[in-house]
Length: 476
Ligand code: NAD
Image (cartoon, rainbow, N blue to C red; front, side, top):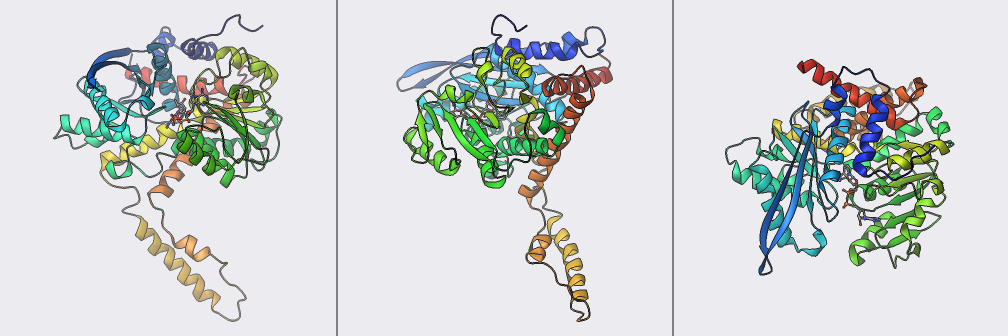
């Protein structure tokens, strides 16, 4: 029996949480303590632009402080509202717990359409918003560390970090006040690609587990799988690029604001992205067939559906028509709680947002650690590692020079083996390890407990368990 009306994003998160805690044995009152959002700050501020004062509304919600600092992105969109920010903050708590990033959950947002303002105006608005948050410690390396989200990127993070440092000139850890900064302003290699890269690693790990693949009615590997993706932004672009160029998947359709483009042989993702940057949409792209009704394509045939734009796009109105046997939630909350039930009954496997898009916060964690340690990863070890590898290569070459041994090193081995890992390789390695580990923590609960019907419930069980343990240890 499916529910009668569509739950909101916030209700969806609460419903999914409630479904999981029913299967847990939490101490009295713990469920409520974990579920509620601790605080939400709303700010209205004015900026004088184009000869008039414009008033903007922004939010920063702190869901859980079982660990500090709290962490979560700042979103710029006209649809931002308190309920959405609080739902996203709750997801951050569960996400950080699942991937063992030592943070509580937070999220922020500003009601703005960034495309309506030029760069100088965006800088003034962002700095003013940051000022309001900084003076209340809602941006602070030890208390609350934002990151990019929809509508924001490294540009906004650089302005916010600079604003913090202007207001705290003697804070030696000032750069750690936000993550997702440009590399030349205290960022880390691999942060921009991190969430999309995490989607790739999540799918790779899924396909390493044949039983899980079979549960979705699929077989084989990622090679030649047909993928439909919604939202070719930061997350969607990197996910689509890596899946198509490194894993052999075919991105058969990309859905954007102005419609969708399809090509059964696979779209050229870099060319499509360049077209979007140039024209503002997918219409007119020469490498695929255009249709105006983008959301109808969510229902088209494919192996994997990747919603990577915004929440609530798969709802009770279209879930029954979705044909994808596997959905990976690159966006936060793209499947409503009502749609989730319909899809589960159809046998569709959903890799949930809280796990799937955790690559961003994982690499943000690495960036924060880098900022606090004031040294780039790999700087101390790289050459030493190369020197030790050189010893082995020299020894192998000495042995193989013996004419009686018919044996040589294979082509390329020496170059690859001798190269010590730089920051990007280390970041990718740490991210891959995190995504593999968290997948198996979550999937193990799904595989072994008959009362756990899907990966999402399993993910909630793992993360709520960790948050509860943390509160218990504090003696609450
Ligand atoms: P982004 O702004 O870079 O990209 C969003 C893309 O979606 C844009 O290309 C936009 O044109 C498109 N889009 C917007 N509305 C659409 C619609 N109605 N139909 C089709 N396409 C539409 O944002 P992003 O950073 O890639 O974030 C996307 C999602 O991923 C969000 O849900 C965000 O919360 C989540 N997320 C982002 C990160 C990160 O590191 N950036 C981390 C975790 C989760």
